[in-house]
Image (tube, rainbow, N blue to C red):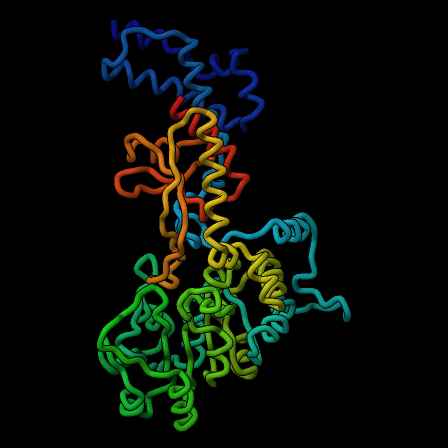
Length: 456
């Protein structure tokens, strides 16, 4: 019987010519179409081997091929709906952008641009010139340089200013960021030796000064943006570090991590050190991420004294760390918004979500709930807490509301995640919820469609 079943399996090249697959053959590339047909036949071959099937028809194979072809036609990197309530979700791409920015970006992508072309002189220009002046205007820095992420910014600076020398940093600031990337390892890559001072919970300015010697090149302060130590603690003020650096002729640098240009305490949240404050403190160099609390693209922004920035532009690492036209275009748009804080809070999605009134979130949750109820899908709206995310403001939560579903939470999470446009929610108190904090109204129809397929 098994032998007969194997003989029933069609050949790939013959099945590819089947008129029932003609539509799929036109949609897929030849390679993907061939692979889908081959995988469909292989699916039934494995079923026969494992004695999981007694009989099958060619139409059943064709149905399987159609199912597989739908997967083959999808890109791996694609849109998802964020119903987790985590605003800067690292796994879901961190900061999102508004439509105006993506429209401007479309022009840059579809046509040529003056990326490294000086329109006034007709000669080669610098890609960094498009945004350096604007960033300096907003932050108060003398000079600015963009690289592909904040880790690259730290490596570039330490390589330029402390290669072969020591860098002093507090033990309480030896942070680890995502993917097990740690400050000590990053320093090693830069060619500088780490000199730890102070203790985990307390570091004083004299700890820095007592450890300065002829091998010292940089005094480094690292903002612990992704964790907090509370209780019997004391850190060293950046102004004191800046003054100590001047006293001993050493470069001072702050890795501000997430970085922020807006004082969130005005919106009822905890105070987060701003980029402007770091520049005003007298630090020679400040580095920040572009895709966290700034709400922009993934990049690292280096701010500091003009002569130091010019030195960094000549470092050979910069070629490996340089950003492309996409990043530059997005970042220019983002910093244009920061000319007016009200405009920034309104137009930059991350800031808008962090600062919006909870009543607006409730409106979204209730609207989605009503749409689901109209389709006879049981649900209710519950109060919840959203997170900032992205290794930023770890203790901070924002009041939010979510739509909560009845049923097996683990199974529901899996089914919503398996939607054509995956709906990513979370499980709270053994119930599957979709948090309205991170939803857009355009997401509602897709969530409704997914819920109908799951529940009805």
